[in-house]
Length: 105
Picture (cartoon, rainbow, N blue to C red):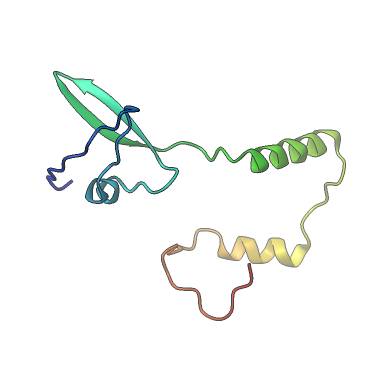
């Protein structure tokens, strides 16, 4: 990791903004988590790789789990979809690659 020296100002509420170069070096963005460790009079800041904590997704996964345990609303995948998924399993994916064509959100 490159050596970076940045200065941040503590607010009256005890908050600070991580400088952009530090955020980039740690690979954190809005909503990202960092940990502070005190070691021999120095503070070490590291990225925390936390699981996704979206309450809507958590609620959905809870409902899905309950349905699976009860055997309701659960079917096997269509054979052609399962086959296509197996064919593409293990292929490297570049998440930063541009998407070609139209995308509907």
